Amino acid sequence: MSLSRDDAIDTARILTEALPYIQRFIGKTIVVKYGGNAMVDDRLKKSFARDIVLMKLVGMNPVVVHGGGPQIGELLKALNIESEFVDGMRVTDRRTMDVVEMVLGASVNKEIVSMIGNAGGRAIGITGKDGQLIIARQLKVSRRTPEVEATEIIDIGHVGEVEHINVGVIDSLTASDFIPVIAPIGVDRQGQAYNINADLVAGRIAEVMKAEKLMLLTNVAGLQNKSGEVLTGLTTAQVDALIDDGTIYGGMLPKIGCALSAVKGGVHSAHIVDGRVDHAVLLEIFTDQGVGTLITNLEHPVKEP
Image 1 (cartoon, rainbow, N blue to C red):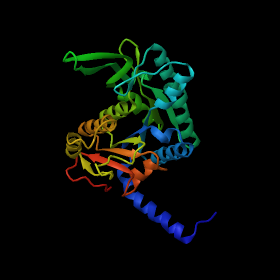
Image 2: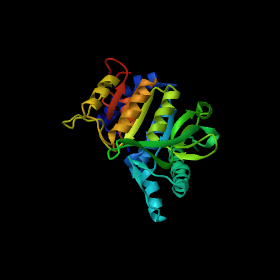
Image 3: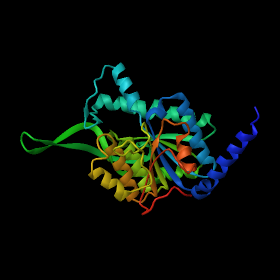
Image 4: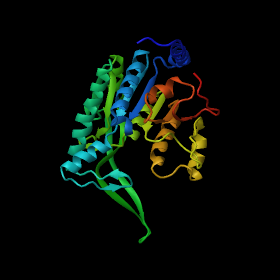
């Protein structure tokens, strides 16, 4: 079906707007944390895969890190394994860890690889255990116990935090023209596997690779002020102030904390992206308006190529 003249003009305008961004980001690493609605809605899954393939085709180096909490929860429920959470983190015993590895390292990871392949790209799926990509250590949660005025250390099982990223594993894949798709499972120096928050893994990978961008897909329009308006073009100092005055709180804190840590650690910019929007990744990278919240260390951040 041929385009009308007006549609053709709109297409040309969009391509013209995207060109300087493409020129700027050729050869740059962009780490994308894939999760939320974009992982479960078929239309959004296809648009995400096409976005990643297009990024690779125009010369960027996308690295995908994915979550899978809902899928893990569904299988645990089917197996009659109860889930318990402490401060938003799933308590992970040996049986639960087996399910986590099965879901993240197998079904979810391979589905994403297949999606990218169907869109014309070349992807390889790995976990943090492959090539000791992610060296982890056990995460212990500290919680204040008012009754005894002491800090309680809670063992939540096979839940970890990143100790070290073996960048050479990712470099070898991108140098071979593959798109790495990474499941956030780490391993300690004794070979014990750990479930790690995907946002944290994406942030650390972006940081150690000195990525151009860290993009965190989520189910909200972006970071909002107390009036519900989406904020963007923020410096790290402004975000710190929003945390201090209570504008940023609750479930958004860990995600924002991850973005802040990455930018302070050398990533050029971090983006909280509305993954419910078709082609959200491309819209945030290649358009002036974007679809989320931009955080950078620049004193006067602007979304210009």
